[in-house]
Amino acid sequence: MTAKIVIRPAEMVAMAAEFDAFLRGIEAGDPPFDDAKATSGLERFAFGKAPLCTVLIAEQEATAVGYAIYSLGFWADAWEGMLFLTDLFVREAWRSQGVGRRLMQELTAIGRKEGCQRIMWTVWTENAEARQFYRALGAEEIAEERLMTWPIRAK
Image (cartoon, rainbow, N blue to C red; front, side, top):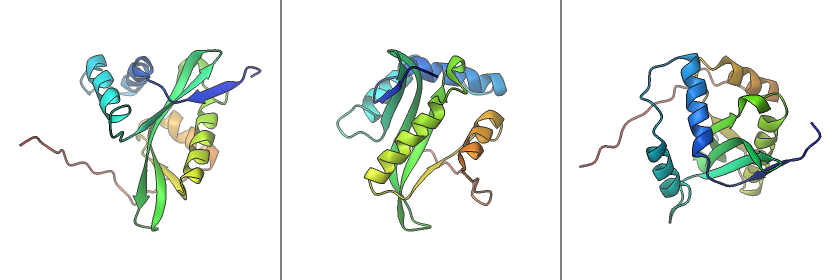
């Protein structure tokens, strides 16, 4: 790859819809992607008064080719700061060209700057391509941990 990949924070609803379509190609089931909800969520949680996450866009020659959404947190198992990767997506035409690796390197640099000792994330079990990519980077799966969710409902 000859052109330089540039990484910057930005909005990325169109790519989120592509990511949703990619995951639906593996296995359908969730409700259809909602552009308005995604836009509203990004405006509130990434670009609002008190952001809960940060978005990085990978660009090549002013074309958005991938993104990562992350937040900073604390992992009590090791009493360490962590960077939590919520989503990483690279458009199909740009896969296997170093974009995902470059995003992970940028996240590592951000985590290091913030005093974090690790990056943590979840990977959908059915997404073999992603699991293979992360293992190739040297990531390890934590088999004894399970992702839990408990919805917060309005009163």
